[in-house]
Image 1 (cartoon, protein in one colour):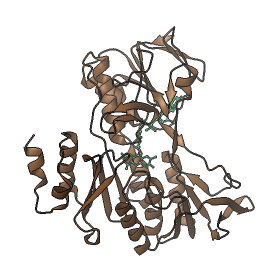
Image 2 (cartoon, rainbow, N blue to C red):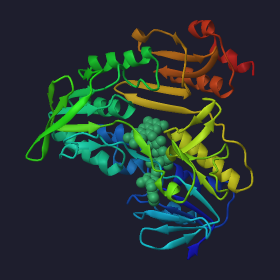
Image 3 (cartoon, rainbow, N blue to C red):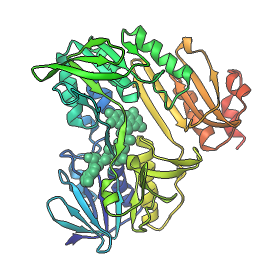
Image 4 (cartoon, helix red, strand yellow):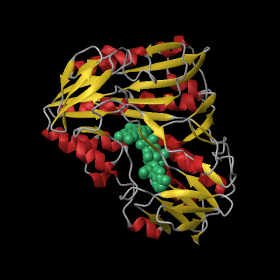
Length: 409
Ligand code: FAD
């Protein structure tokens, strides 16, 4: 048995940040990150943006170069899976059988792609995007493909579609729901993205399910839709959501809901085990509900919160959620959580390609999306963070200075 101190399972955004924040908070003992990917910790947003467009290389996604870990006295174990947790003995067992003892354990195991449960899903040319290796493979395949079908009209599917279209390919997006990104944005935003993709030449098909994937000689050649139509495809990218990696926690007897269940300090029902990022379900004051979020902000801020708890400065986790997506020339920034909104107000004109959308629930401002309005979004984030409200009339009135709402607080 080796190590003790803090053991972090998962060498992604949240795991990396936990180690960095622990050192920043003055933690002096041993820190070990166990990651099952071969690479140094990297960030995922560039995978569906700069890497696919060719504007960035894999090395640009790396969070820090190798010497950083030695300088910070962080032991980084890559390419090894944590296979079990002995809660009584306080140790993690690697798949190799090696045991690593901990004083506190942080689970930052992320999420994995939901797989398409249909015939043909394992044909060559059917790809998913989560890892840098998958991004590089998809980029190579986009370069060689003629007709690309993206299954799923969420953020990642649409970012892939935009990159493939920008590479001059024929691109079709298939979405089973009636609108794009329908789980998280208002109809006016879905419509704006639909129009933009259509103007760029992406064919978007809504309200239609996928019946199967057809192949020849083991390679995909078409997507079969439930309405009977057949769309030729030499590359299919599936982006239909993720499943939290909660099995390690589950097999250790920790509570599982929509992810690993934690309290407002991101602690599991074992006081020496925390869970953060995509794998954790926690009580969120903005949603006024327990949620599991999938964003860089969430992973980074939760890591900082856990580092504070471990170093004796616990405060409940209440950071303002924010997220972004880049598609063609659109940068959309989102802050707050729109869950269950009942009223939507638009500030500015979608036709002008720059506008913001305010989401209300029961008269309370819950979240704001800004499309190509980065300066306004900075104020939006402050408004949501301060939990101040502005009336729907003020939100819609472009002559109303949003900054005055924050200045009052
Ligand atoms: P991850 O970064 O996924 O890290 C988890 C790590 O744990 C992985 O390396 C996993 O392999 C490893 N692991 C799991 N189980 C074990 C085990 N048993 N032993 C060892 N290691 C294990 N968010 C945004 O805010 N904006 C964006 O624009 C954006 N774009 C994205 C684009 C793509 C293509 C993807 C995939 C995600 C994007 N996200 C974006 C989401 C964001 O990257 C995630 O929310 C974030 O990475 C979550 O961090 P995490 O540490 O929880 O999980």
